[in-house]
Length: 257
Image 1: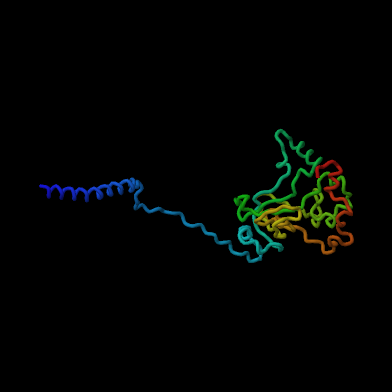
Image 2: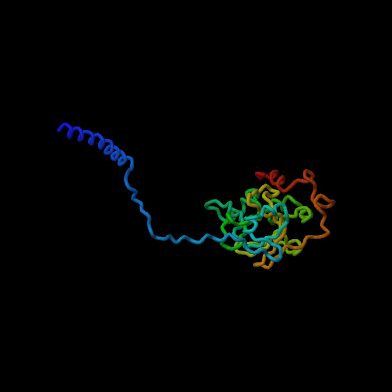
């Protein structure tokens, strides 16, 4: 009997560590994962194509091409084809609730500096969103009322003010202010920059306007006058500081500058 009792004691002593070890393993193991592998195959959408449109045979550029790899063309003169997707309209931009068209025009006539410089956006298609469109800036515009009052008729020439035209100009050679509206198909020639001479900036690039062809409206900028004096030449625009600019005139007339 003593021998049997001793054997049982030895066996129990050997089994206790094993039992305790198993319990500890169960505690560390944690609960079984509820997520199980599935045999269902997902149908993922195809990866969208990022190919650029084919280069135009006439050497012009598409909007998407310039947005993707236009840096190599910076500071060069280019022609871009597209469709007008947005156009700045001062009366719409400055109108306040309750104002009539007459009120809006009166406010602009008294302080034309409320208006931003003429500009519009173009895209490769009519539904191109604004954030993916290309900016066209420094677009020629008609003289405003204050300029008409302050600048003599003989001084309102293309040589003096190459970015402006007479309201209702009839002379085809002087009709430099382009007609444009959302949806028009256009071709614009200009300088490809990241900043315009008037401090408009876009890290994706912008086109500083020089001339345009509006295919929809069958209109094209008149060719430059080969006899026109170059800026700074005799008869050309006066050097800065020798003649009051329209902006300076507006400030003296009570504009905010």
